[in-house]
View 1: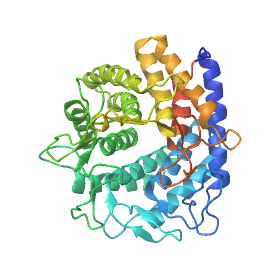
View 2: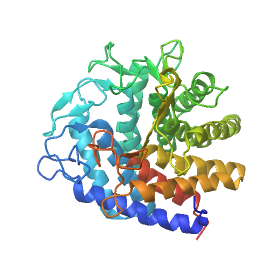
View 3: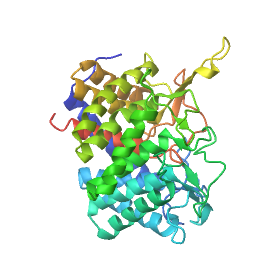
View 4: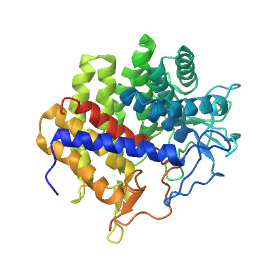
Length: 406
């Protein structure tokens, strides 16, 4: 790998990259015919105006453009954020049963009305960031109401943590999966990580004592059940009694959690948990190194149950979002340890993105590449899961963390 450039140069590259990503989303994704945002843009930048519209995609657009406005004060970004917020509140929000629908058809009518807690968390995350951008009291009240809905229906009072999914009327479901590839666990690391993320952002707007207690409870759940303290990796799927149901390793979630856990502890100002999550951050980041390839990219997943003489347990793909999280997570490890190797790993991750994932004249990233660095075929540039959140957030985090380097 090439030697890493100094922090000031890294920061300048993030400024340019953030603007490029946001330009792409403003150019290709607004749905000028049916409202909101188009549900899918393919790898050749062709919008599909008939694609369903997902709660996660729209919530992440809301968060991204709100956060970008807070950093830049570019009013064009605030306009996009407002468009996203209005569409979410007018079309995704379930006024009768509470919470938000999982997906809509292209015209904005409910398509899948289930209440996936992962989706509720991202809706909350977007609302809180939009409130931070404009401080509109009605938006904060909508966020607090959504927090209370999650607590009422999803929180497990006896065993702690949050159940994964419900029907529209909040009755239990048999199939709780976030996607077809997931285990049908009653509780998952992924959902808990993003509930923690959303609750932390809400706390920045509304430092409520109950909310603070729930954030501490989430940190306890991670420390007690979700971090495998033998390996440093995260366990991903559980039954309601916290028995692990999977041996899958997700390197992207490892490195993402490595910095998000400490951010939550710092948000609530709990010194015990700040110290504990600092230790966890380095332990988890060290485990994530196992997924690094010689080209600086982070492999997608590994599952030892698949390992046979003829079957590689490693999923030899490098998706966009683990690279973005590696940029932040490794930089975070450098900041708390002072070890320059972590900084180099962060910059190597960015170098990998520049070489193999940047597309559309350097604007939006490909979904991912295969082992030979060829783009994964048939994947979205924008879509139900391909959102501007991970890579824009990486840019914003690096800009924030390197703000003293000019």
